[in-house]
Image (cartoon, rainbow, N blue to C red; front, side, top):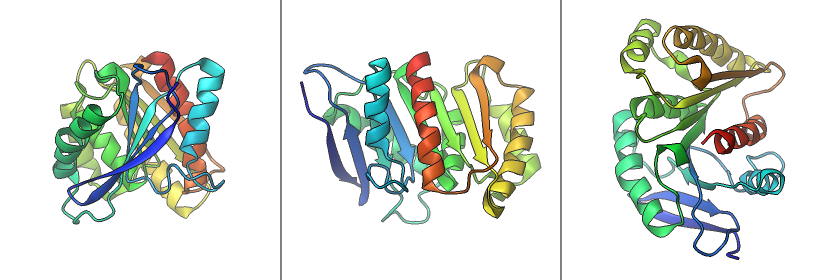
Length: 229
């Protein structure tokens, strides 16, 4: 048995932290890449608490995943959009796959993020359905984009086999209410062009825009991803 570990590597001067759960020698595991998450592996009760969620899932279902946190700390501002996608797919993923026991293939690869990272996750996953089998889009800041342009992009981009899309918002504070309204409009658009069995919306009206809410919803996304792929 290989004990769980947290390793930080530096690529293009940006830290990438990798949580590998306990696993058998020679075993490979599905992987979830997280965009712009803060304190994802901290054990404090106000953060994501990723290790705790992975352990709980493994105890209940016997399944686990490697989680890779791709931070924007230290990155220049231009590391966004297509530039970030290129960095993630062509720099981070090959480095992770060469150093850690990752099970490859879109069915074993997910992407998730919250707030600005949620929007980044949304665009990246839908743009690369051949790479990502699932996307956890938590409280995405999609309101910063022109609605008509966003609509056109969605209908142009969604393929016949897009990734499983898990869209979450709360509504417990002003920021989350604004995000909720935009996410509802986006979800309505998606219903017109997305395979229904690959689209899931979760709304928890009392939850605020913070890591505690995202850490809680991550548990459900983790279970869903590992159950379906």
